[in-house]
Length: 224
Image: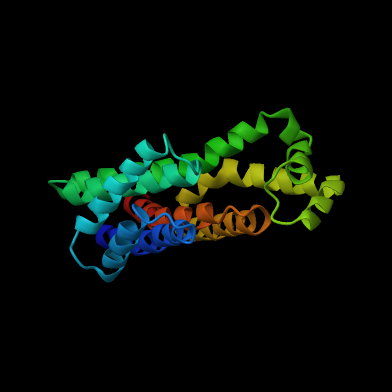
């Protein structure tokens, strides 16, 4: 995958992901920011206006950080801003070298998002004992239905699933050593995010993390 192809795919996926976020807010009647945001997504998806729709989305995202006093959706908003920033810098870069640096930074951050998450879990006694997922299903507001709380009564299943997540996140960087392994790892990662969307309603993480995958595929081709 070339640098231009990676940026093109990222912008297309990003336009869909941000449009999906914006439609959620429009359904609640919040139009001042999200109608222009939706319009810019459409322009970017159609390839109209060059990099201007992308820069406009970056400015709006910055304004949202001020309006909501930070990333109100946590990690998904941070990843959205990171991708917008790296793509914006790539378009502003004076030479191909600096374009590559912008996308390389995003790729490294994507790898770290998995590895650091795995490291935080593996040193946590609750994750080691398989209790973390049990508590999520039993006590938190995340499960999308009350019926899913019954999974809290299956400790062996949650223990295995918890350690499967930990091990996958810790070994994820090794997938960079082989292009086939990387694609399989990204497929598994997408499945992980999709399951989180189904079980916990974290749909924004699924869409926005997918947007960064082309950068990592390009990075692997470029470096390894």
